[in-house]
Image (cartoon, rainbow, N blue to C red):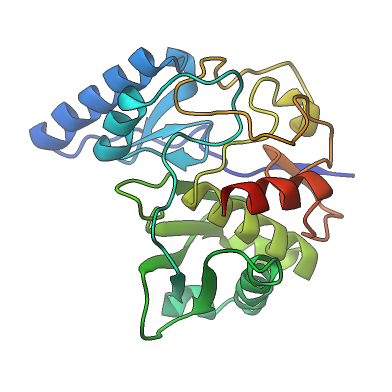
Amino acid sequence: MRKLSMALLAGVALVGCGLDTETENKEIVQNLVQAGFPADDIQIVDGQVYVGRDAHVTLEASQEMLQADKGAEQYRTTNLMSGITKICINPTSGFNSYSRLSAGLDAAIANYNNLGLSFTMVRGPATGCSANITATTMSGAGGSAGFPSGGKPYGTINIGTGLQSYSAGVNKHVISHELGHCIGFRHSDYYNRAISCGGSASNEGTAGVGAILIPGTPSTAVSGGSVMNSCFSSSSTGTWTSSDVTALNYLY
């Protein structure tokens, strides 16, 4: 089975976006380091700060991480949604031009709604939205997103156009995964990405601030054990595992 990373940032040129952006990014990086994230796990790509290779961190989100109590392990961020009942996922026209990405979005939305959580997701445009997430494209066969802030989910998921060449299940998996980051989930194998990605051991960060073990879920990860693993298999169906269901029901 081929292992694929959720985001392929290596080799992308790093660019600056002016003094204000540089100053803000420096503060975000300082906040993340103070929160316990290893410096080598923090990347600046196209003027935005990422941790764990596929999770964008805003200034507000990084500040919230410093205000949280420490936890024992890392599975969810300290930043979660609050008071959100309807999330509208709004695909761009470019996103909709890829049939498998478009179908994968519908499948991912159903993936969440089938669990009867405290919120529902709908494909936009729609009315009565508590929050909005834009679904847009990026290069490659992975995805990227970010963490909640201010009680609202992160506002964008970026899905690789290369996924057009993969199965409906893989598209469902990747989009469900990135939406998971938007509502506050960290990678389930944060402490050793090699579990799902193979290769040498790679730790996204062991500090409790910013990522906390969800009660009732395993403290160790296994390959294929969660949609929130760092990397996915080309044979994935995108179906929630039992620990995914436990985690989602516990939080929402």
